Amino acid sequence: MADVQSSRSLSPAAGQASSKDIMYHLLSLQMRIRNSPRPTPDAPIIIYLASGLRSEEHHRPTHNPLNSLALSAQATVVEICYRLSPKSPFPKPIHDVMAGYDWIRKYLYPSPKKRDIDSHSNTSYALSPLQSKKRIGVCGELAGGSLAAMLALTECNPNGIASAALGNPIVDWSSPLRPHVPSDSDNLNRSIKGLHTTSFAKHEHRYDTFASPLLFFRTPAYELPTPSLYGTNFPPLANGGLPKPVNSSTELVPGRRSHRKHPPSGSGLVFPATRIDVGPRFPVRDQAIEFGELMQRSVDLYEETSEIPRDRVEVVERGEDEGLWEEPDVMEIGRWMGNVLRKD
Image (cartoon, rainbow, N blue to C red; front, top):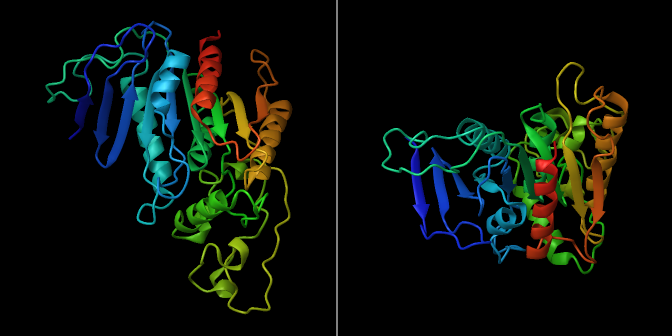
């Protein structure tokens, strides 16, 4: 049964995001909701997906990104607290994000009613009191950026995802880790390496397009290892990020890269306005840049609609180091998403 909990029920001051965080539990999945400070009929919904790094590893935001997004975008912000750990590897995060997205579509789009969340609950508030037509955006960085990219590419139907902001997204888990900059980014390199090591129980899951959304647009850079060559266990980071062959003289076979068509013809999918933030010293920035290029290529070649501007994928060089999101960055992203989601 659903369990809804709200914390800090103080009324928001003028110009501030609501001080009420609504905690929603769907079985084992938790979501946090921060309402727009000034609910309006066109207030958008923004889905936020965190980086996936544990706080003791690297870069735990000291600010509240939900508050920053709600304030700067004047939006209702929902964090889907997807599970990602050695005990909850891929595809679990994909299932969590899709379940959370379905819940948002059911209860926040276009309009929830009081007690709609749980007919047995004593909770009597509406999640957002002045809702009519809504547009939905998604943002996330690192592993959350990967999941945000997946959602943007697969749920961009006319009533689905309308904008996406991706911060240093890890969009290809099937390729070996070759850090772009080895020195000053050592801490982040170790964190990304740990994430790469523990996020997949089976090596073949790395080749799933929902886990590695870059593979929607091209074939993998390396062929999928087979048990006959590599044995049954694939240590994710052995041999420079690749499974170690049973026969040490055997080289991993590079795949022949070729383009894939996405979205499929007749799918009705139209890519959302997308910005991809990359840091000049981010360890695996090249795949994020390639993702942006191939996404725009797909728009140019395959989209049939002329109602939406075709130049809608932007790669932004952020900062001078890794380019991880801090509070000013999230505020800027919120303003951008708010403007995009309110456009006709």
